[in-house]
Image (tube, rainbow, N blue to C red; front, side, top):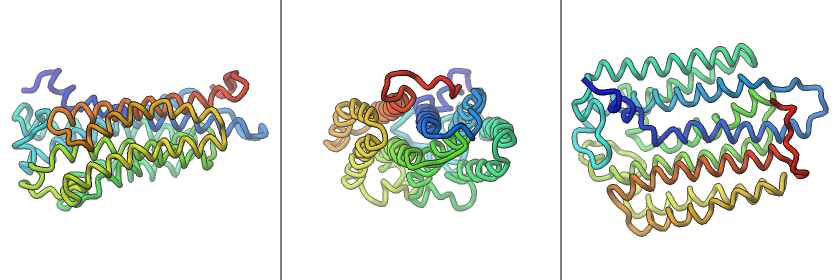
Length: 307
């Protein structure tokens, strides 16, 4: 029976930044919307933001347990270069890990339904698609993660949907700032998965898991990572056209460059594990400073009326 520590590690806490960053960036984008409204729209409620965090965190935990379960029962995790998995490492019964995934998805569903009924009911449908995408990433008879579409799904759901969805439930409107922020966060999130799949190319090839990294090969995957880590800083420059303070996002560029050079120059094994974690922290840092740029405004005074 797995210990509490093993269950926590099974939730893959390194990936929690993928859940936090889109909500933070979405809140910042919502402040931008409200700074241009004429007062006809109601101010957002603080617990909407909290529920958005609950949904995002529960989804990432759920997809991680679901991935552990599905890969474990398929035998994909029997030989790994990364951290041991609950099922593949024999630490927990598959049924127990599947139950943990279902519980996490139920938490996400409950919070999402509450938030949707308080804002826009049709967001329940969006939430249902998100949960289905989380399960079928490595679950079901034809998991799309095994066909090379994992990075695209992460870009969409933990980038565009996460940021734009948060902006919408907080501000009641979506604008170009929200879309661009979603592109940036989605690029970072995809880079996290690219790092993971780059590390696993040898074992995934043997197990028949045709991830995008397997399809592209080691060399091209490393440059895909570099591209994904560069795009958010291009977005920072474009966002500066809406708000000059958005350039503060470039403060993370030297860190991203250092990690990117390490990956492009052949990092492997545990070095890629560190790169994965660092990518997540850079993603979170970019989201925080960019959100603060929109929250504080040109005059240096926070728009506290939003909360």
